[in-house]
Image (cartoon, rainbow, N blue to C red; front, side, top):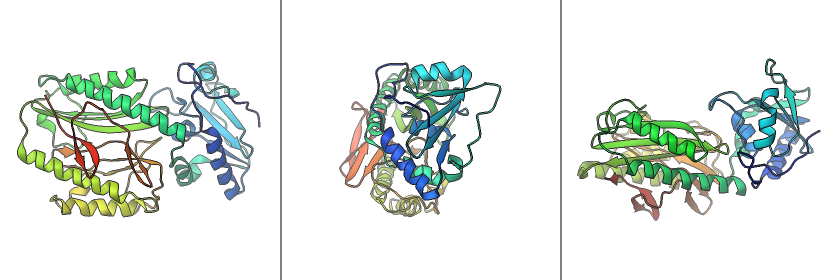
Length: 361
């Protein structure tokens, strides 16, 4: 199959970035062998970004991809892309792969006979994406540090009279300035903290606020939640926050290679009651799950059959009334690496791991 290949360029045509593509092609070869197929056609943003080393495959942030990629048993890659995108993709995103232009007025081609389609094998593709490879993990770690620090800087500059929308705008600016794309921006001030998904409004922050940020760079999605308050803390709230951190610690402990997501969620469900929350608290908001090339890949549910694997990224987000904790981590066989770390943010140690607390201003 046509398709010469060089190391992929960084976004914007900068120096070449490390590639894990050979390992990904080997995983795809095993999938083709399992199905007796000649080629695999990738059409979804998460699968294309995964194969193509984090290339930006969409124009609207949540839009359809402007290309497809077909991989054969020998590792050849054919990329079909809309003609009006080809020059930019070749210069800035796709690292020397040969591109086949398709008129913008036409549809991207259907898979050839003998090809299997990624959307027909979503669970298997999810499993291929799950264990992060070294270059992926390095990109993710860099994104986590930069975004957590940038979010921290925005929140340290906040004031009680600032509106939720004004704070969300500053967070969006920080995300884009870091070369990332916002995927989630939630802000609630003191008067709206009961909402679990607080889309920002014109309301002022007041004495206490929450900020939830999701951002994508190189195809990888980072999620984090941070709290800030102006003035002294409420003792009951601090106690609830501490108990919720114990729920999160139980989630981390439950996320062990070989277990299903449903089994992990069962442990999280039991943890809420054990730490003084109601037995139905886990139902009032989803608990998160694996992450990577999707914000939740997939969201954990009681019947979820997907297996935890070593080297997989997770964003668990336990929550309770006016309390929530969330970071993006990688679960290894022998420990946890928190990716979204701001060295200047206040923390407390929970079972040996530094976890974020409220920022007091």
